[in-house]
Image 1: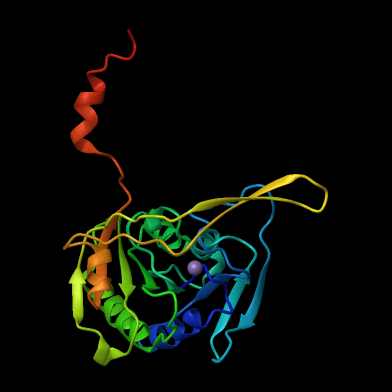
Image 2: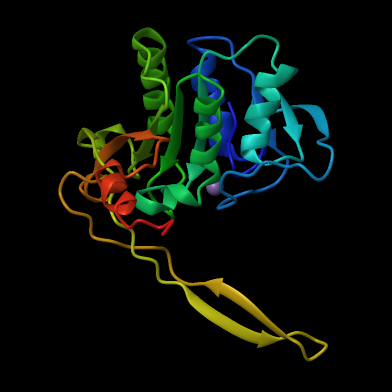
Length: 249
Ligand SMILES: [Mn+2]
C-alpha cells in the first residue's frame, strides 16, 4: 500500500485498517504530500526510509522521502518482506478522474505496481470537502479481494473514485471510461521580496460535466466509478496514418 498525500493522511490509515482484514499489508508511503507529482522516479539522490506507526492504528509502515511511485518500487525491489501480489494506492483526498490521472501521484503509484507486474488499484474520494473514508475503505477491501481472486490483465489498473457520503448516500457502482476534465487554471504573476517576478499556477477545482458512461458522470450522479486503465497509451488507429507521412524523405 501507498498513497500520495503522505504517510500521516487519515485516508491511508483507513485503507490500511480495511485491507488488514483480508490479508497481510505492507505500507510504504511518502513522508510528505506529493499530490499531482505524477509518475516520478528519483535518480539524483538516495532514498531514506524510517519505520513508523500509522496515526490512529497499530499498523507499522515505512515512511520514505521518495515519491509515491518510488515507494512502490522500494517495496518490489526488496523493502517489502515478500513480493506484493497487489498494489493499492489511496485513499486520496480528492478525485482523480479523466486527465487528472496524468498528474496523479495516487494513480502513478498504481501504475508502478503494474510496471512491476502485479494488478493495482488506485482509490480516491471524489469530493474536495468531505473526508469520510468509511465507505471507500470498505469498498476498496471488497474490490481488492475480488482482484486477488480473479486477477487482472497485465498492463491494467483499476482507478476508483468514490462519491462523498455514507453507504446509504451512494447509489451503486458503475464501470466507466475516463471523462474529459476542464481545468480552471489561472496564471498568478507576483513579485517576490527582491523585486523578481514569480508565477503560480492555480485556480478553483477542475470541472467537466462528463458524458454518460464516464467517471465524471458516474461520481456526479452518486455512483462509485471503477475505470479499467491500461498503461499502453498508443493510439493504434493512427499508426498507419502517421506512418504514411513519409517522414524520412
Ligand atoms: Mn493526493
